[in-house]
Image (cartoon, rainbow, N blue to C red; front, side, top):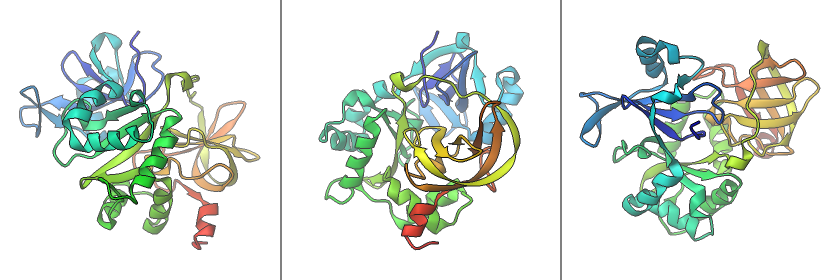
Length: 313
């Protein structure tokens, strides 16, 4: 059995490259296609050109070429996997050869974040990045929160880690297309502290569970309709995970899941959340799901506590 988790990459026997999107893989590796060899592709690895596929185009290609692998995500049979790329192994090389990654590693090293808790995913993981590619930097488990605080503090210093420019904030907002205003989006994001710039390149500090935190898969329920709620968040330990998980105190809804990265870490424990999404009935409990499509409309999460303190409401 292949051991893999969220944000690892896999390479198939025909050199298609997939990003792993789950911690549990009951019958094949749950993933999304990202790169395919293509002589007209604009990325190169070991003399082979590759084309990058976005979410919708990847599904279209898979339906045409690997229809039996298409479910809610792409499920790659284990016997078709040639190699697993692990972010925490790749960082050993990148910390020596990529000055942007090296700068982040050095900053975290200086604060005592263990090197084996760091990783790099995205285009840098298979080596298909461009000069201007964003950096998807991982810290595993509870050390992520320490790393986030270190990065936040480093932005106010004189080193290579800088805050995000106004232009970049607008770019991130327009890419995400969230169902909240730009001002609300930026207010929430700046508080999270997990985004920054290094030598002019944007990076994101991503949370991935430690192996000992991976305990129970998310079971699928039955969608019963849309709902808007207000509730106090009682546990936000995995609010930066994918999906983000918020336990709440609510008479009907047990917890909220967000499959949209925009709403990861959106509300802190003890704060009042406002959320709108789709109610999923699991029999004994109900949950609210935000991010039921790639660019969900009419679905969001806001911290009413933060908005009130900041004078927005």
